Length: 331
Image (cartoon, rainbow, N blue to C red; front, side):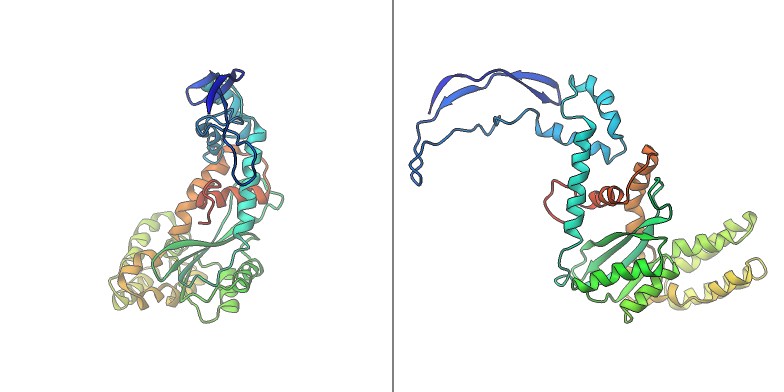
């Protein structure tokens, strides 16, 4: 290979701005032994098709962190010196890739994964979707080797039993086996669907949702004391201490909580299943926090744009938090 002048100058967008580059031309005299044809040199540093650095290709990921598609050019044009590669169409292509990744993820085989624990929760996004009562149904699980994985994610109608059952049956058809324990927020639809699809799975109610539901039924003046008393149950060292704390709270709240809430509080079975499992697992099994903590950033993103959206785009963005589109693999 020998130098043979230079190519035409071209502009390359980098993180430091637009740089004009004039790459050297190479006369490649090598012969491909398999085909007998001459090889064609291609620079690994600056390929012929390259018009922007790889870092600039990652800029549209700011869309996932809260920057609206129409804000890229005015926000970054002065910084980069050019609007190349920052148009709304670039972001649209990115979301289309997310949707394709989510579709492929929803069709994968689950027979090779044996999940011991399962978290199930419905997340309501604050964007104007076609169906105002739609939400994202999420299943996360833990395998025997302690690895935490996203199992499935789909849109549903108000966390209804039918929506949850459709998602669970789809997982069952793809080879998912019944988990030992499922942790949920107390929605009747999820419990009904779990009982129908995986009747052998035991149920554990999320204590954070439980405390919030009981506190909401009390006068504001009584809520701080009630929350403190309920946390005594939440942090009990074993089942016996938890049952004693339950009796004490029940006596303290007598007359304060409506009868419907009193009946709900007597059903302590679902909140105490955690004590049937190793103590080092309790902190993880008492709440649906593995799902809630991840979706905190998703809720922030949907509140920033305040624009109309589609269920497919919302699911794609949510899925991208677990599996970046450039990673090439599932969560």
